[in-house]
Image (cartoon, rainbow, N blue to C red; front, side):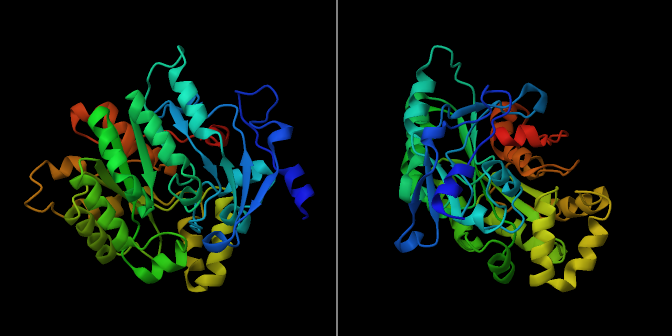
Length: 371
């Protein structure tokens, strides 16, 4: 596909908020920048967002009402990423396009500043990382998340971030300052300590031990940070030994909460992941056929097993707070967007009860388009 045709197909449908059905105007689409140096092989589409603080439909019943996503697509290239199908709304593919063609909302910081100052804005909590990672590789080039965090801090507006990237440490001082002004909560996703599994399934992310270091440094700086063991992959990272090891490592790093999430495969992601699996680990195809033969989610029994293994690991003595209350319990299937709630927005809204609540609703495809 040539550049003109590609730009012509790059579209974004925004449900319920834009009469035109497009987030970006025709004239703002298709400003294509080819990455060089460390960004070689990537293409960045510069767009001007009409709005940047997105309201989640009330029917979603999520514990946050507003989200910010400065980027679409993600260089982390996680094989299982639930957000991959959202790239089809842009006329792009769920495979390499998702990993290498990233939409950059270049006016995001200015939009945040303006929208937070609007008389209509009531200072609600804002969640980031509900779709693609705000600290992915593009952030090193564009610094949009950094700018957004600065605006939120200056406004005293509470926020949460879900990430897999150690680039978050670049903003450690900024996040600590924000935490002194308002409620700030982070969660790092660390699905396994196994470097072979990490390289195979999350090739664009920092290694798990580096993410553990980030958890420790964030908490030491006064920025509350938990961990999502997510996703737990059948046959790759779901053994009792593996789960105990990663849980213990997270607790040793000072994580304020640890929440395991079993892999789920919804349409769009399912096809991509199973196609990848048949090439990378054909020996696991039969297991996945068994686990996902009746739908997008594994059995409640398997989810319960994973949670119980994680819960069985004791908190180190130097962390005297109630360990049992900081372990997320998988009472029902959840999406990655819902998982972000557990260690961020849910913590902020429900910290008085000192429990991480588990959402029992699943956002629709239409809702996920807004995230």
